[in-house]
Image: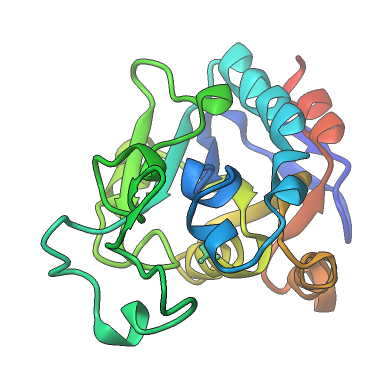
Amino acid sequence: MATLAADPFPIELDLPALGLVVIDMQRDFVEAGGFGASLGNDVGLLRAIIPTTARLIAGFREAGLPVIHTRECHRPDLSDLPPAKRDRGNPALRIGDEGPMGRILIAGEPGADIIPELYPIEGETVIDKPGKGAFYATPFGEVLKAKGLRQLVFAGVTTEVCVQTTMREANDRGFECILATDATESYFPAFKQAAIEMIRAQGAIVGWTATTDQIREALGV
Ligand code: C5J
């Protein structure tokens, strides 16, 4: 056991049951010419967390604890993309359309892949998910069970969309969840701050928050 100096209060970490989930650090969200940029967002905000997220991932690897990556993407035939999702955003560049990095958010296309700076290493699980949450229509829940995980640290983008959705889903399924506040980002700083506050409010109603340094210290790295 190790104590993590988290907010709103410290949490005891059961290290053999702890894993890191890195949500959607994909070129389509973080690089110019991708889906996020096509919606008018400033990807520079998201790029700023790359070094911190890399330190967090390195800490888990060094501690010998699992790192799981997710990618929001769809099948090339779009059979897992409901109109309710496709018909949003920028009508000139929808999910599945051809963009500068291949078809937007389509599995196997360059834009849907994880950015090189945070690329998974051999043995790390990558979950492709058609929804905002990582449990919907994926083997994510079975993977966590098979790895014996009970506590999850979350990083990635965007804080209030796919990160928060997956945290809430995990919390409902009995996992203790910790958000790494400096390894997650939103295109909207106010949304990130609001998500952090709503997650840890009311006695950690969804989970805890901590910085990468605090997490690395608890890992002993
Ligand atoms: C969004 C995500 N924001 N990964 N996806 O559409 O948060």
